[in-house]
Image 1 (cartoon, each protein chain N blue to C red):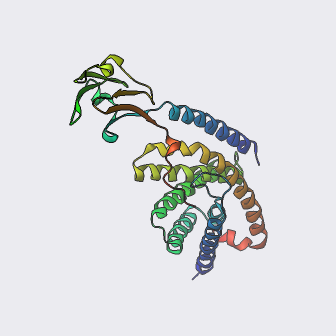
Image 2 (cartoon, rainbow over the protein chains, first blue to last red):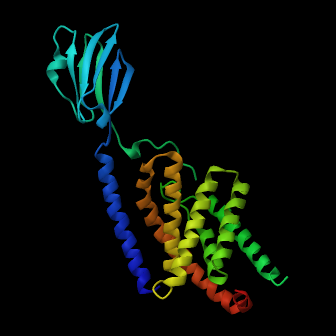
Length: 126
Length: 173
């Protein structure tokens, strides 16, 4: 064991600890946020955030009613609805994972979901 | 026929590495990290590198990966182990040849383990088209420190012993 070995070990420990911290940060930043639109309890559409969907308006026309949602930079809102009280329009933007917009008359649920990497291991093999 | 001895020695090394790989696959690692291995067969490659040289070490490493695939039957792991053993072999050769005054065999072995893991992660991310697999790399690097240290330590003893008991093999180099 030479001096170089010791420096190498220390170097690798520091590097991997630093990158562990970085990975931890990156995974909890919810980079993989997406919008999940459900109508009547069933998945209607999934939209991933990205530069190409900013400002996009998505109409949702189902047998229960009509809503128009607008996707922003990491946020989403309902801009038009044919429900009587328009609570979903008044709610404005939602942006954090776990937040929901509900339009009960149209049975519409818009939720922001966030995936973190460690959550979905497919399988472990040895 | 003057290479016969070398040929036999190399094939012995390949079978030794193969046996070590298979034994190693029986040992569960007490961590939750997928893909972490003891890297016992890395020892064989390192010894080949020290005794013979880059070409022979590459032959042993690649042959070992191929035969291991035949023995266990998992084709997908072939790419991982092939890329890993090739890159770690080249890295260990470079370190051993040019920086052997700075690093002992322990350092060389750690370099090899790090290169092995990096190559495997690289291939995995290419194959699965998902760069997020790199988030496993720091954990793997930490484990490769330990495994690399111990395989390096073992290699020091082995190469010392080989030098004493089989001085002729060194001369064929």
